[in-house]
Image (cartoon, rainbow, N blue to C red):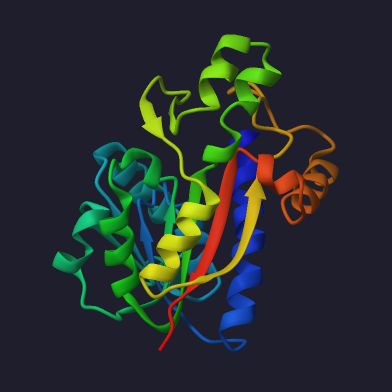
Length: 243
């Protein structure tokens, strides 16, 4: 359920930004950095866009290839899979090659994200959209606090590091810092949303409930307004390259 909420909310938010940045019907060139199993990449390919997925994890590459193989030929032809690290986009692609760059669930694994973000911005054509999905560093105490882990909550107030559900020690990002970074790389923030305000503490194996539509509506509304979106588990930031 947690992943279903994340993917659906990000899809709705992304579609809203695409509609605001590009003419209706324009076929976009999309780069999905750290594409995972390809949920957003395939969704955009089904909508008619040409998508390049960049992924370095062999298991995720295999999962994406399997998912792509199940699609009709016309959609398969619009997707290209590249095995590689998101920090090496300059090795694989020319500057300005894409209208949209997605980087979802990647920055938490990168110790120094600024060079990666600068490289992604260079991949964008003028007016292109950069979509980032990050762990919210300003709300790290929410999950342990709601679970009654008071020691964990107290520690979380003064750090950007946390242990994710895979048991890995990773890092979170803060809205103000990322806003400044986006401005510095020439892709200033256009809009931002919260993702998983209410459902982040759900169990990993929690299924999609029968009232999923109402759940999504509540999450979507909370993710668009203060103060709710500021305590969301994830932040979705969209910047637009000038020029």
